[in-house]
Length: 185
Image 1 (cartoon, rainbow, N blue to C red):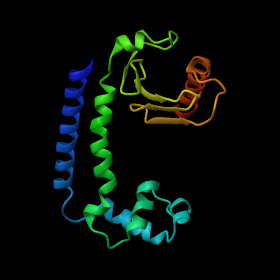
Image 2 (image 1 turned 180 degrees about the vertical axis):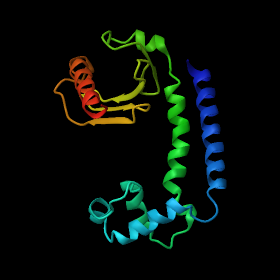
Image 3 (image 1 turned 135 degrees about the horizontal axis):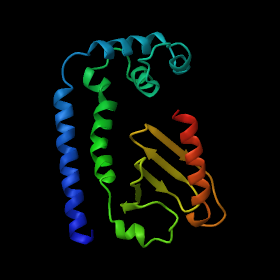
């Protein structure tokens, strides 16, 4: 996909994301649902950020969301309390567009022949393996690797002395395989 076609693709994705945002905002009006209300109560009872991790012993404690609820306070409007879910739902549309895949020829023409079949779009490498994945790669070995179906997200920060993933791909692939085996049993 080149030039004008790519522009139209991302314009369509942007339009869908805006429509999704509008729908989520429209649906977010009204009082808190029972589980949302309990999350507000638990966040308030935790008293401080460390309490979110140590004092809330409930399976409904989503740590980042509880920290958000503490930051905005228990009297915040329901729309504000739902802002992280609204943002995440909207971003899912963009992630879905990325996961749809990109130009397989760009992927095939890369110097990374040991990678599995995939595609490339807008700085994202999409793996079309039995475990579909999406990855952002830094030239010094940094990596953001996501397998949506497995709910697996791995981040590697660091610095390889040579600016090329040719030196780190095999190591990262083996590490991801080992971590997947340990984390998803």
